[in-house]
Image (cartoon, rainbow, N blue to C red; front, side, top):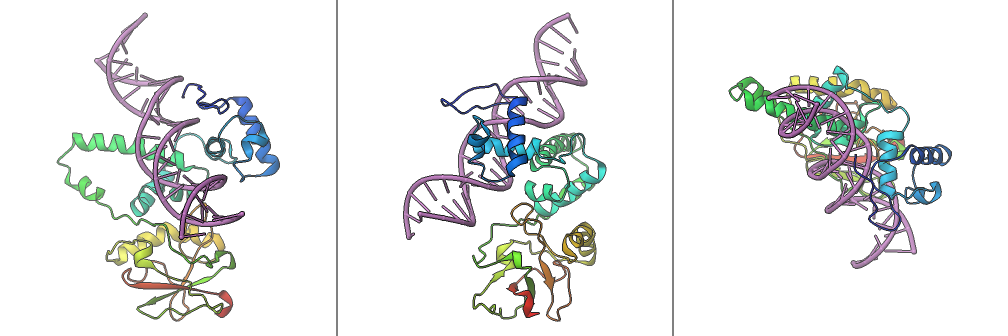
Length: 254
DNA sequence: AAAACCTCCAACCGCCAAGCG
DNA sequence: TCGCTTGGCGGTTGGAGGTTT
């Protein structure tokens, strides 16, 4: 890939050598991931923390799949991209063995070839219609710092209702319509079924509940448990997206 | 055979948010 | 509150290798 070059007196850039890979892998096998700022020093690598992290995540980590994407993986990428846009980390989090970089590279390649094809067939109205997508773009949240997903909180979804405070006195509520920037689309039965098909099996596999996992990496795979006012579990997408207030309450309150 | 072109993908870059003192 | 550090992400680059002309 990139030629070796030293921008500073120490740090190496460019392709990794087998020796460097071994040093990094051995260190992480022994001490685990994290503390990336320490890894170059402790592993004896003249690499920056970012380079080490990237090399591990995209190449050295166990269970990384290599080779072509299977058809079901491609389908999943296409569907998730329709929902999430270029949120590669989120998409990759739902495809076992694939990294965000893999997905991103695949998509860029795929998109290039698709756009070329579209240029060749400019009058293909059907394909143009299919390419019109609605993207759900989760944006960085302004959650309260006291929000603790580790306690398996429940999300109470109310439409126009007043948010309640948690028993610790904090108001751990957030507004879906402004937070997640969900599109104001009408969710008809087909879309609901589509989304259910997309997520149901995976979500249920997480902790036996359904919901929306906030993000692949920082969310550590925890899913939000969405319930309605009667404490019946409902799909995250079963209620209108406008003017929804969600609140976190401790699970022992239910 | 060789030059031109294309595709793939590892790696880098810049930015952002969270955490901490 | 502010500035610094760190982790993480998406966009982009550019070399290697394959394909076409």
